[in-house]
Image (cartoon, rainbow, N blue to C red; front, side, top):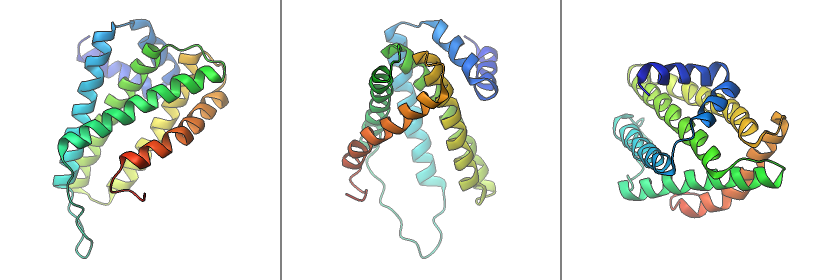
Length: 188
């Protein structure tokens, strides 16, 4: 794949996520390609997070959060992605879905790459106009939810976005305790 079909697929993901999911699922890359893409997404996400930590100015009077080791961030990111893939797979199957691990993985990794692009754009825009950062992050979260609903619906062949929403909610409830345990600076 070159950059033209990738950009077309990115636009299609936003405009018609169900069709984008069908195209991604039809690719059927090997497990090696999926795992390589997974780890590339983890590393790129880590780089963007480091960029955000280093380049975003903290307003005066607010405490600066001490940076965590990069390796810990990478491990946490990989763990969170794997946990979400497993939760989407098993809870989807519990609700009558038919997706395979590879189906959920390719869709999750693709969405992760798009979120990395969105975070990079957010970072660059916020360097120029800082108050746009929150709005862009909120827009990215809402768009990611919309795409995830359609991706899960296509992968599990539900025929219902409501079932996909149920998978997302139940996955979040299952994953929340693990995320809290993995976040040493969190509320636990």
